[in-house]
Image 1 (spheres, rainbow, N blue to C red):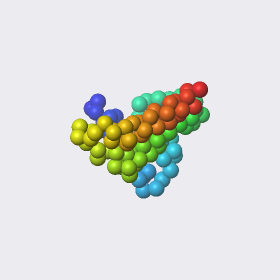
Image 2 (cartoon, rainbow, N blue to C red):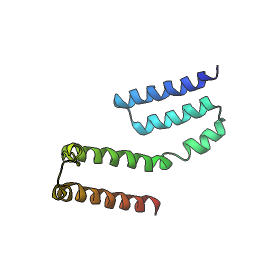
Image 3 (spheres, rainbow, N blue to C red):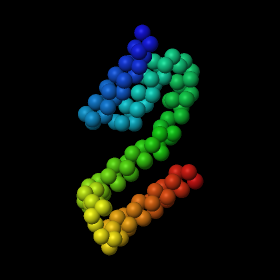
Length: 119
C-alpha cells in the first residue's frame, strides 16, 4: 500500500491541471496543490502554515518566469520558422543571417533575466 500516497499526489496534480485548463487561477491551484501535497505527505498544520501559506508564491516566481519565457521563445521559433531549418544543408551565410543573431538574442535575454533574478 505504499503506492497509495503516490497515486493521491498524481490524482491531485491531474485535478489541478484540469482546473487550470478550464480557467481557474494557476496561482490558487498551485497553492492548493502545495497544501494538499503537504497534507498527504504527513506534514503538520503548523509547518503548512509557516512554510506554504506564509511563504506564499515568491519562491515559485522564478519558475513561472522561466515557463513564460520558455513558451515565448518556443513561439518565436515556430513563427519565424527557425525550427524548420536544416542546418546540415544550409550555407554558412544562411546560418550567419538567421540562427546566429537569434542565438545571440536569446543569450542576451537569458543573461539579463538571470542577472535580474539572482541580483
